[in-house]
View: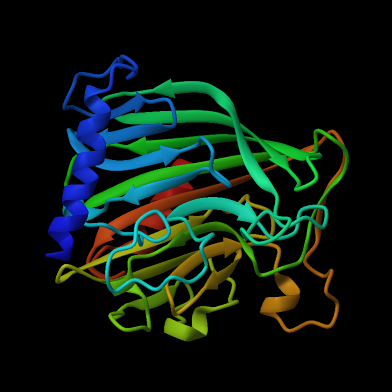
Length: 327
């Protein structure tokens, strides 16, 4: 029943989008490949005629993707705080499905939604492209502190692939942070950065959680928190089927292999900055990373949504393919 409700909601989202008079004409053949439709407040993304996700960018604390539908249309991320279905915890309201943020940028909090938090404000699209093999979204953002000051800017490219099969979804997320308004210090905190909040049944612990976590070093479950690894995979049941999400850290990312802020309650994040938290260091600035004024820094990640556990999905092999294809 839960799956039917989730799929019904998701299909409702996307069906409504396709009928909106504001929808943007696309270059790909309808029902084939990756179709991206622009609406006033979000983008609707379909793969071979099936709903995949929506990119919410207007009047939000920071842009995010929700819902994220994986193999066979199964919902891979939680619904709250966007919706409030039964059997979901109402914790961490800033954990909005899939997003990029950090808890200390020049000392400003851009991670939480608590008092005096900073916002990542959508500043426009430079390209929205549908296609048979992939679709691509290029956008700009401003990181604005609670006092209205501009801390930094970013450019993002998200490429969604047409895998040609229903049991997986693959997309790449690239973000370049620009020290466009002076030096930027990405502070040492566990609160970040490239993040997902998974479906309640996939989480390691909780009322309905039956998931597992494994990283590229073979470390499992709760021991994966704060460990460095090339990739990390979080899998568990959704509507009786085992599905998982692997996040790949690109070898050229700063501080590769990254630390993983991966929690038993379903938070799943790559964080290259939280060294003092993850390694229990006295120096609370050990993980600081500075972008000099006028410079920029790029991070690249791949998301692999798959059926089965990490062995059945051949996550290690797929990571090597990713590295080979993206030198």
